[in-house]
Image (tube, rainbow, N blue to C red; front, top):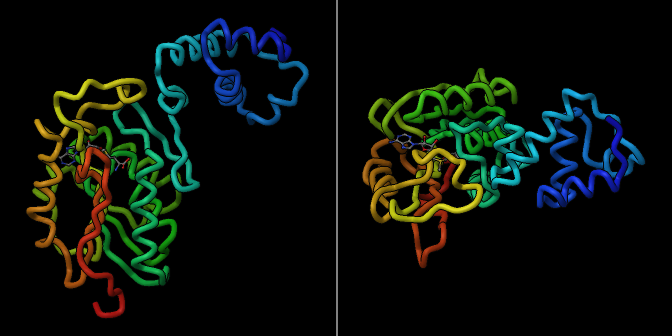
Length: 256
Ligand SMILES: C[S@@+](CC[C@H](N)C(=O)[O-])C[C@H]1O[C@@H](n2cnc3c(N)ncnc32)[C@H](O)[C@@H]1O
C-alpha cells in the first residue's frame, strides 16, 4: 500500500483524528519518526502494518490515548514503557523532579529515595538518572505495575540502584530515607472519568470518597520513614480542586 499526503489526511479525517496524531501512530508502526513521514511525498506501508495502522486509528478514535496504544510515554526527556496496568506519566508530575532538584542541587550526593506508588517508575527512575550516586526503592501494591517499573529501570540503565517492593504503602517498607517521592491516587470516587483517563487503571486514580484517603495515609506515616532533614514531595493534596505538590521537611543534604 502506497499512501501520499492527501491519502493520509483523508484517512485522518475519516477517523476524526488530527493528521499529526495519525502520523505519530504510523511513525511508531514503521519504526521511523514523525518528521520523515511529514516530509515524505509518499509512504510505502506493508499490508500487515496497514492493518495495524487502521486498528490503531480505530482505537484512538474511541479516545484511547496514543501512549496506551504505542505503550510508551515521554517523561522529563526519558521514554517510559506504559501499559493498561500503569498510569501514563503526566507532565504535571515533572514538577516533583524540579522540586527535588531545587532541594538537592549537588547531583553527586548519595541519597536513599522511596518512590511510593511507583507505577511506571517515572519519578524514581528519572531521579536516579540525574543522581548517579542515589538509590531508589520502588513500592506499588500492584505486581503488574511493579514489573513495568522494573522493566523501565533496566531499560533506562538504573537497575543496579533500584529495589522493588510489593506493598500497601509503607506496610512492607523498612528503614529510613532521605526523600519520599509520591504521586498517589487522588481522584474522588464519584468523579466521572473522561477522555484518556478512562484507559488508566482505577487503582492508580481513585483515592476514596474525597480523593484524599491515600494522601492522608502517606502523610500519617511518612515522618517515621524519613531521616532527620529528610523530605517528602507529594502530588495530590487537593487545594481549590487543583493538584498540588506538597514539599515537607528541610533540604539539607550536607547535614545528614
Ligand atoms: C497516580 S499513580 C502514580 C504512578 C507514577 N508514580 C506516576 O507518577 O506516574 C498511583 C500508583 O499508586 C499505586 N497504588 C495505589 N494504591 C496503593 C497502595 N495502597 N499501596 C501502594 N501503591 C498503591 C497504583 O498502583 C499506581 O501505580
